Structure formats: C-alpha cells, structure tokens
Length: 214
Image (cartoon, rainbow, N blue to C red):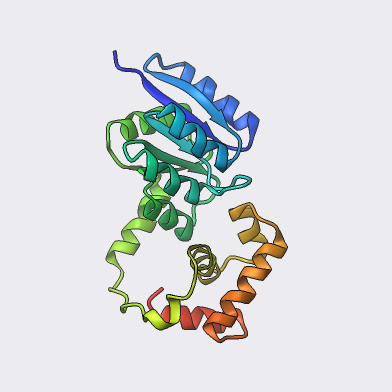
C-alpha cells in the first residue's frame, strides 16, 4: 500500500489537531509534519518533500499563496491543497494561479478531506462547489483586454496582489487578515500603488487597473 505523506500548514493548533485526527483514520495517509506559519511551511515542504501540503491562506510571516509559489518552485511535484475559511473569487483565483491543485473551505467533513487528499496526491484537481463556480465564471467570462505595460508593469508582485484584493472589494482590514501583515504595511502598499497609478481613491485605482486588464 502506498502511503500519502501529508504536511499540515495552518496557524490554528486546534484545526491542525482535527486534521491529524481525521487523517489518522485512514492507514493510507500519514501526517509527516506541521507548520504554523508560511515560512515554516516552505522550509518543511522542501525538507520533507511530502506528497500533499494542506495549506491555509492566512498565516503569519508568509501567506499561503506566496508559500505555495515558493514550495512549487523548489518541489514542483508536491500537490498543494488549500483549506481555508475564504471562498471568494479573488482567493480561489490567487491560489490556483499560484499552483494549488485543490481548494476546500474549512468545515468540510472528514470524508471530503480524505477524498481531497487522495485526489490531490493522484494528480487530480479537487474543488469545493463554491470554488468550482468561481473558476467556471472566470473561464466563461469575456476575454480581458491585454494589459498596458506602462500602467501595471511598475508594480511589484506584492503590490499587484494587493491591487487585485482592492479590486475584489476587500477593505484594508480584510487585506491585513488575508496577507498576515500589519495595517500600516497595507496602508503603505496602497499609498505606493496609488502613486504609481497616478490616482487618489480606491475607485480610481480599480478603474485604472481594470482598464489595464487586471
């Protein structure tokens, strides 16, 4: 019997405990490590080379999207299964673009979690119904115009990520929670983004970004 080696990455100990207990009921699944922040998740994923990483999106030091990118750069065969409390379109698309193979919302029962881990390990994509709907809407949406390099090319990866969250309607507080950074850091990023885009309000920033194909 092939055993699926799993790394848990979530900053809530009780949630990790629940996952470990759920996976312990399946002899084909073994939890080989636990990480409580994104940076440690990357380190352990590189060291342990698990089959599946169960990844939260909001963690200290490094958010789950960036942790996913860094893990897959060094361990491209690892399957990232996002399990988070967020089910909005921006979160789903950010995770998928980073390379996540699956996306579930916290609250999924034990059987659903086990099916997802087995599917991810087998190379299949597995998504909650809400996540699948967001992806379907993205696929069926009319093609966006090509981005204008002069407008968005000056943004860093992090600034681009924050601009996408602003465009999705998230408040500064929600962005702070999502990325695991301080409110001051978010304010500084948004001020820099506004300056680069030549705008003064969130509405203007969103209009400029959408006109450029964001």
